Length: 178
Image 1 (tube, rainbow, N blue to C red):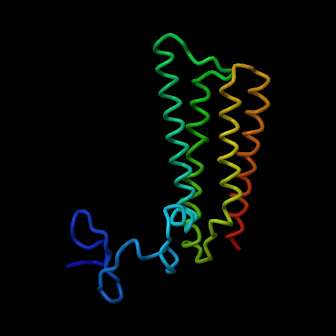
Image 2: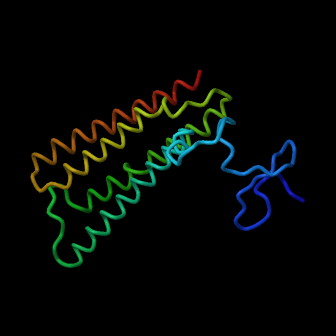
Image 3: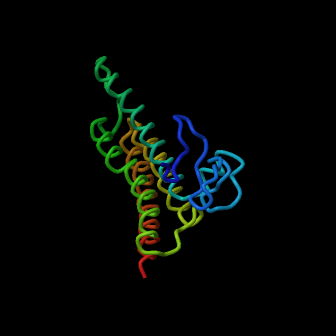
C-alpha cells in the first residue's frame, strides 16, 4: 500500500504521482509545476521559504563557528577583545540572528495556505531578506572591533538594516491579511 509519497527504498529519487500513480523523478518537478530548475541556485530561489531557511542555516553556522572560536579563546585565557563582550554578542545573534529567517520561511509558507491567498514570490521577499542578511554582516564587522566608537557606528548601522528588513517582511506578511 503506497500513499503517493516517495517510492519505496532508502534512497529513492522518485515520487509517485497522486493522479496517475506513475513514478516521477524528484528533480524533474519545480515547486510551481513548471520546468525543473537548471542549477542549485535556481532551485533555491524557486520558492521564498527556501532562501529564508538557507539564510537562517547560514547564519546559524556562522554564529556557531564564531562562538566556538570565542569559547576556545576564553578557555585558553585569551578572550576576544571586542567592544561588545562575547557573551552578550552570543545572546544577540542566537536569539535575533538566525531565528527570524526561519520564522520568515515558515510564515510565508504557512500563512498564504491558511488564508487561501497567493503566496509571495522570492522577489517579493528578497529585499527584506537581503537587508537582514547584509545588516547582520555589517553588525558582525562592527561588533568584532575593539574600538567602541567603530563598533557602535557599524553595529548600529547593521542593526538598523536588520530592523528595516524585518519591518518590510512583517508589512508584507500583514498585507496578506485582507
